[in-house]
Image (cartoon, rainbow, N blue to C red; front, side):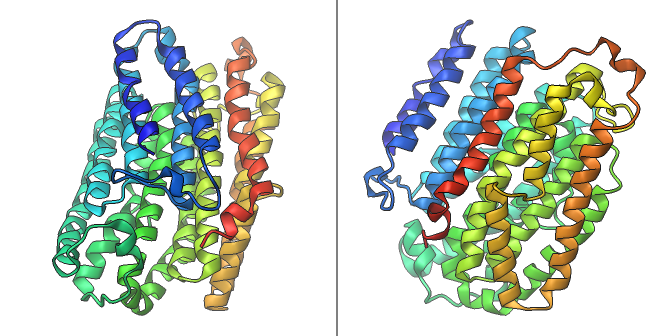
Length: 448
């Protein structure tokens, strides 16, 4: 594992030179290929040592981090062409990748916490530095305060557990069932991850951050940073398992009802980015519900859904940005009839929209089926909410696709050009893994 961390570290000097945008991009893709080949599945013991290690969950998420960070650079050609502080941009992307790899592979829960918090800094700078509207300052404040306020109790919780365990080893932590913490300690351990996921009711920072962020910020936020919450819950679940049996129903109920409400909010959106951002909340609500049932299907489904949602959501954000660059607006009232302007792009809109509503053969389908399984096994009453979530998620995805692609085209689009091969490559690199991963589904289902 250390070799990949050092590889990322040694990319930093490249930032100092001017013409290194493509070199860094290629290096990140190369890193993802090497990381993929280094796995000795099913046991990833070969990737452990010096306080860093990988199991199946962290392997998938590190892989996702490498992939999305490479795609961020590919999608942000505007920064490169206009030389809009491109050196600083490259530095932030690399720093973010470095922190994410450290977070997912750390064996020490205190270090995990430090890296978990540090990944917030480059994201904030991306939003503040390359965002579009002046409201980005408010969005950054929301992001900072929501996540930091919830995270401080987690630090206290870690120290309390350390006091009784005398170790900070993360895998001992996640498999230690002797603890029966009091309610406050339980909320401290879970709260930070619920905000990061985000759970409905503490999700307000997410749509704001997405709408104000540049395409790279949105891609990494939807692709990987939301998954930090799920990953953290995987890790602390073992030590709070008894309290979770008492309070789990609360989180499942909030996430399912929240999923229905957020899906209805999606149907009222006129901003493309806002719609995709709210759909993230609905999907991560399902993930949280599945995890909190604490059964086998739920855990596996949550893992698969996190990987699938990372690719699918990131792809939709990059698509939205491609139309935004051409038409100068994200409003559905202006982005309509796009099938007349960019017929080839319409195919990608269709493919990624269908992935978003969990159509076969995407990994989303497998994840969603496992989550439905776990939630119905947990309580058959949840079927009502699940039916509504499934129906409305298909409805808002169809709304997104049909309103943006069909209808009478807007006058401002006459000067619009079709997509470039770079853009189609970015979209293909989101969509192809999403569909090929279903062929390796045992890695998602048989890992527990």
